Image 1 (cartoon, rainbow, N blue to C red):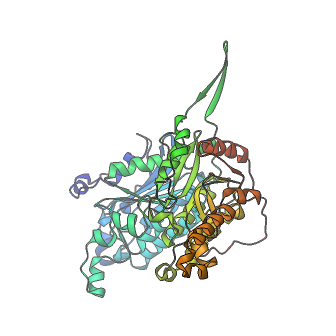
Image 2: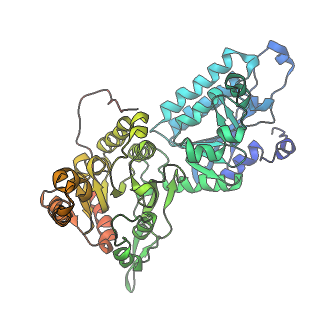
Image 3: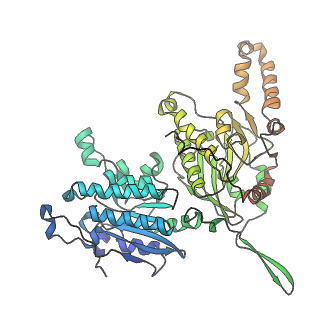
Length: 511
């Protein structure tokens, strides 16, 4: 067994690589691979250097009783720097995980490429990137940034499905503070350049930010309870209701909880004034199983909500607009967040439950110049391509292109339900009458007429009944009926298969 310099890592306020692995996997389940692997570099005195396991511990274990592949870079060994053998070990582990169908978890803590090995170190990175892409959509890939991750090293986490960061420990950037100072004459700290809060709140690179390492590893274990462990894994969608026959008849047991009184609370959840915001989490938590919502990218683009939840014990993907933040409007960041989550769910056959309350895509030069057309198109593409069961609930506003984009029937939603106060139209009554009756509005004496026209527009064009009559809405339902309709819809759609067999290599998603 290898000797680990645990104290050296503790002095930096961090756990050692082997401690991190043991914190993730079930006790006693880890088996290391290629512990005797060594570098073959002879330049710069490297032939005299002993680098145990070439600075990365790789192997297999179980989490919650299910197998996982895992690697952890050891910063106490040559700064965790990546050389050819180091890279080969990681790449081979990912390739093996693909073969045995299990998730792969990487703990990144490295000073970057091993300069002494030159292009061989770059070869190591390339091998990893290639396997990351091979694994995409086949097995979930989780990256934990538990130290520095700089230069080319950041692209392996960038290619994976979920990135976890840790306050004051994680630092990710293409070029570090020293290079920034040399090139841009700017003084900036590691934390301000690429710390956990930067990537969870501003860049959208990180999916989770954790206060400490132990919280991080607990969240990783929790995530793996929600998602399939490989493409085709049906366990997260298995029935959680069992019926036992005994002497005194049949007994039904459920291994999930739902407080039925929450259903009635939905009837009073919308504000009286349609322009007032509310937190969509209050709706989500009253529809899904008790305490089961597990958010993804919660600090980034909070006008959109993404995550996982359980409905009758089965995993579903959640996508929602959040009127409590920026009115729930769609912008570039929200579009990216939604599209990426939809595509992950579709990769692994996770049904999608969508809650819609969206006033449209954000107007103005700032978002136009950022490419709102390109970013918004990602949402349209992702939903249209997704072949999983898709259920949409329109709680209030669904305006314009954003109505279409948020998993409308027109993009292949299987079931679309609308609450009675839902407003489905090209735009709100205020904007519509401003265009339709622009001349009349110039005359203050027509104020009463304009208000009348607003009311007429709402009644004629914005009620969910109009959309239902045109077969765009499956049913107009009372809010308290939402869970029941969602449960029955997913039960009906459980065996859904795609019938779209167009001949092509692959589509060209707007990126």
